[in-house]
Length: 138
Image (cartoon, rainbow, N blue to C red; front, top):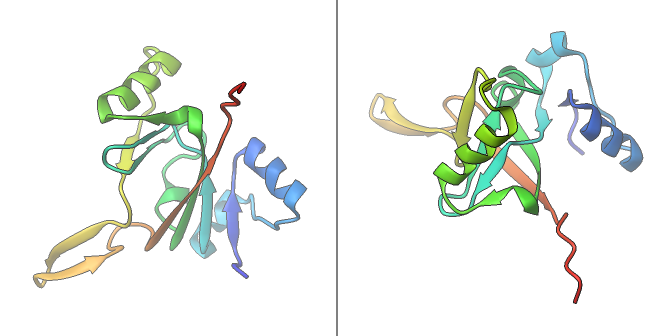
């Protein structure tokens, strides 16, 4: 039932089309977005974090919408943050993305009148759809 779903990546757009999910690809309309759907660089098992980069999406789509949906694959799961950073290094070499961020659920801040505010910067909800792309022969 979610409306104003924004998605800017070709691969993900094709998957949404196949599923009959309507999305908005116009980057100038980002201020109206309720949901942003992106891929990620890696997942970190130990902290439950998502490693995002600015490469395919820039920064806005993972910050403006109230709900951020990340589409990830089991082959992207790493144990530690340093392994996730190594994945990025191996993929981009010296052309490191201009922004890398580890997201672990909604942001929290207690510095607004000493009250804990969740989702102070960026989405209030974060969902990860984990797709198994490692087929094992039994």
